[in-house]
Every structure is written in structure tokens, then in C-alpha cells.
Length: 365
Ligand SMILES: Cc1cc2nc3c(=O)[nH]c(=O)nc-3n(C[C@H](O)[C@H](O)[C@H](O)COP(=O)(O)OP(=O)(O)OC[C@H]3O[C@@H](n4cnc5c(N)ncnc54)[C@H](O)[C@@H]3O)c2cc1C
Image (tube, rainbow, N blue to C red; front, side, top):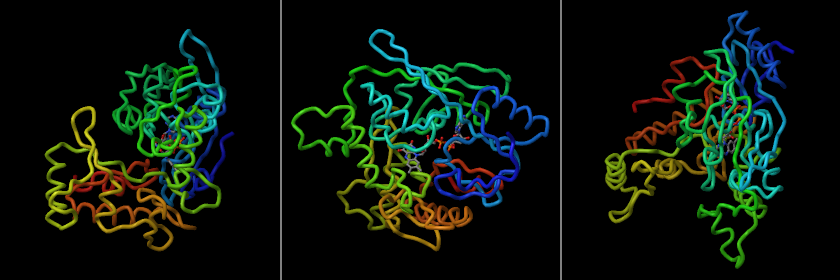
């Protein structure tokens, strides 16, 4: 079951990454525990891999065990007005959403077309078009590497927020997600909250059905290279490489002043910003990148910005992780010089020297 020197690039949507010293695919909890026992016996570091759609893996690869969670199986249970759905972490996320929508269950339809596996979704609380998985997750079944026990975490335990949870912050690397339980609404109305989705149905006089919303979201995503289309280099990415900026009102005002000072906006114009639930401002990273002088289709060598999406850094063919890092830093540096703010990357860095990762994550905060 445990293989040696397995190239990781084919396991990622960026198609980048050197070899894993050891590689195992766990189709059951038993296999997962066996692989972990092997890593402990050999004192190897472990990296948990899902669909590889939110990772940048170093050209040198990973010196320990890469453990891919491939536990399948979906269970449906009706409970009065709601349906509880428990999915193995290794189920394909979009196929899972498809099954829910097919059964008329509302709650995840706007998350159609997001690549990756079910187990990856709580990690960064995936979200799109006005929905986040944290709205429907009731519990997450995990293996706790600290206590070496299987446990069930409640929604509150996961401490979800924008692109964050305990899994990628305070308890990073502690838990392995084995399965996720969602609560969905039978015959529920689809969520039509986001401008792009509203616009899509602007000419329609009746309310769109759940299936129509799923198809609309997939169509919108395809236009933005956010749907995986085989052979299309524009979506050979890790999705959005940068998170939207979340800042205090004070810093937001400073960004506006800096933009005015540099002649990037007119005196009456505002930098786009949306108030978050905790009173902060969310500024679209794409706006900052474009105003800092980059455009869709910009490239340097084998890496570039997608011609359909400013936030997606793409592998134009045969690119190396090192080249991605260089472009990421070029973008971060120019945004920093222009607006005095740091753009945080969204993907997880695997196998890099600590100082490389630290620099990209926290550069002159
Ligand atoms: C074209 C494209 C579009 C995208 N669009 C969106 C979007 O709209 N919204 C959004 O939020 N994201 C988006 N993403 C990012 C990505 O698809 C999601 O973050 C996805 O949930 C990652 O899942 P994965 O299985 O691929 O995880 P991986 O990339 O394999 O892993 C990501 C992180 O999760 C951890 N992890 C994965 N599985 C487990 C597990 N079972 N247990 C513990 N830890 C685990 C890994 O260790 C790693 O730290 C997009 C990516 C692409 C390529």
C-alpha cells in the first residue's frame, strides 16, 4: 500500500510538485491508521492530501509520507424538516453537490464546480457565490493526531470564518478529516444572493430551480476559469491564489488615500469594499492587483495570471514551483508598494523551506 518516490504534480490541479518520499492512499479508516503507524515507526513528517486543488508543492517534493484520504461513501437520513448527509472525506466535492441537488436538497448549490474532495472543504471553509460550507456543516469526523483518537467535532468546535477554521489555523496539522455531516433542506429554495447569480437570472420571471442555480454557477465559473476543464491551461491553477483583504476601517481609509495620492482613483471614487460581520472591510484582492499594474493574461515565462481571472496564477505548461513563487512575490511586492498592504496567499505550501513560506505568508505585514 505504501509506495516510494511518487511524483506529486499529477495529484494537483496546478500540475506542479516533486516526489513524495512515501505515498499512501487510504480508502478506509483502518488503512489510514496503518499508514500513520508506518510514519510514526519511521519518524516521518506527514502531509494530508485531498484533491490537490489548494496546494503549491515544492519542486523538491515532500521528504515524508503524503497520505491521500480516499474514504468514500455517502449516507442520507431524513430527520423531520431536514436531511442529514454524511460523506466520506474522499468523495469528489462537485459530484457530492450534484447528488444533493439531484435530490432537491438545498444548502450547497452555490458551491457547485469547486474542485477537490469533501474532506478539504471544512479546512478553509470553502465558499463561493454567497454560500460557505460552514452554513451547512453540522459535524466533522476527525482523527486527532494529538490524542490518537477518532472524534466528532461540532460546527462550533471548527471555529469557521472567512477561508479559515481550526484546521488551517490554531490546530493546523492536528486533525485528519475522515467524514463530514451536512444538514440540508428538502425542497429548499436555492440561494440567489450574489450579484453574478442574480444577473444570470435577471430576465427570468419565475424563480429558478435548484438545478438551474447549480448550472448557472458552473457556467459563471467556467467563464472565469474557475471550473476545471481538461486541457484548458487557464484553469491549471490552485483557484484564487490570493485572499481578499480583510482590514480595519482605518486601514481601508488609508488604502483609499494611498490610491488617491498615486492617482489610481479620482477624488470622489472609493476603493471597492464590503463591511464584514465583525465590522471590518473586505477589499477585493483582484482590484488591488489590477490597479497595481497587472492584467489578466500577464505572464513571465511558464507562469502567468489567467486570461479569465486576475486572482488565478496558472501553470502555462511545464512550470516549476519556484517560478510560481517568483510571480507571487512580484505581485505581492507591487501591491505593497502601491497600497501599503500585504496580500495573503490562499493555497497551502508543501515541502518549502520555512523561510520561503514565511516570506510569502507574512512579508512586511
Ligand atoms: C479552479 C479552482 C477553483 C476554486 N474555487 C474555489 C472557490 O470558489 N472557493 C473556495 O473556497 N476554494 C476554491 N478553490 C480551492 C480548493 O478547491 C478548495 O480549497 C478545496 O476545498 C480544497 O480541497 P482539496 O481536497 O483539493 O484539498 P487539498 O488541496 O488536497 O488540500 C488543501 C489543504 O487541506 C488539507 N486537507 C485536505 N484534505 C484533508 C483531510 N481529509 N483532512 C485534513 N486536512 C485535509 C491539506 O492538508 C491542505 O492543507 C478552487 C481551486 C481551483 C483549482
